[in-house]
Length: 148
Length: 380
Image 1 (tube, rainbow over the protein chains, first blue to last red):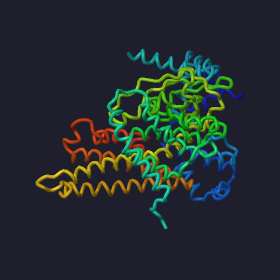
Image 2 (cartoon, chains in turn brown, yellow):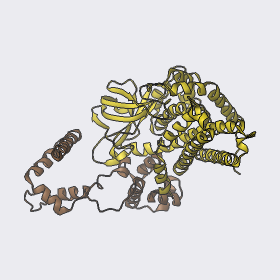
Image 3 (cartoon, each protein chain N blue to C red):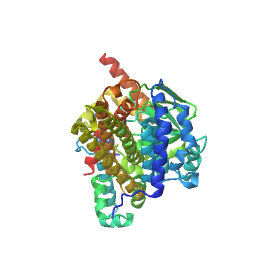
């Protein structure tokens, strides 16, 4: 595994993952615009034109275009059918894990260099989702207490 | 050619429920409206069961007598003419049922829908909104963590219509794995599940006949077979079921608007000043002409959305347009009706004052005016 030469020898993929989770540089998009963009990506990945996919799912090319632009809501049955055709789970279209808040790569590196933060991050990685939530709640409580 | 003619069956449904509204719901609603907040009044539960109203929402194969959406809108309009609160109790059941019908499996429908039917039929409830984040689905704090064959639900939903009386709730919760909207899932939770607690009931200004309360989930165990749809499908399910219920909540707005209009018009014909009924004054007569036109327009918007639902076409924008127009229209007619009726509407318990309070709350249900505008503008 390739490693970067920061203080604690952290694999570069981890930094990239961490960075991408916090990348806020995208323009504002509503939920269905995001779903539409994912649909477009999945269609292109499958090598299909709008016309070809529209034919497979039994709608017009104009309707599919509206789905991709987020101008028309994809109902659950449509989403499941399209996901099936393109080999994607429903969660693929809804996953926002790459679009949360943002910090720069440098900031991430600085954060991870700090010993306790580094340990917290790596210790939390071993926990179940519910336990991570508890840790996060505790940190938020500490912040609130500190602000008083 | 577009037809605005109702079928014989539709006319019959309209008449039947208008009669129920005037005979039973009007007198009951005034009494219930004045009560302290609490569970649904037993008299309302009896009407729901005696008329087997929930059967209109349930497919035949599960024991129901389903209606097309336009006819259903006429039923709801009639119920709302009698009491918007009663119609909202029914509307909340409809919303929960819509989620099961849209995304539920055959087994889920067979297990839960019959609980709503017949003489022991109960309402159902939808647990969506939370005190902090409202209906912002990407911020649901109610959690559902997998635990073997079960999910464990924790959190608080408020306000919930039919809280404490529901045969089952459809609960939207967050599995918190970092996928945002992809973590939202819906579960069917029996109303008597251990770990559910109800209260307090809300002492709200309007729709007092449709009790709302906080529903808390503490370590509530839900079998994974009671998750609706595939993992992660809660968000589109919620949006689609909201579109569905919006169209039909608009019918509630039309029903109350008609009731408020009829009261106002009757008053304006009967009340005379200088030997002339006040309806003959253009200030009053023209206002009533506007209201009658608006009610007709609102009704047509509801029918258009319902027609699109019947045709299985896309109805998101149309449902929001109907809700936006009808809820504003109902609030305006009820409010101006209060002005026209003057002191008569302000002294003692009377339906007009109730209509005014109810219509204010109707502007919030299934999304405020602002939410409807966001939806409509996103589709333009």
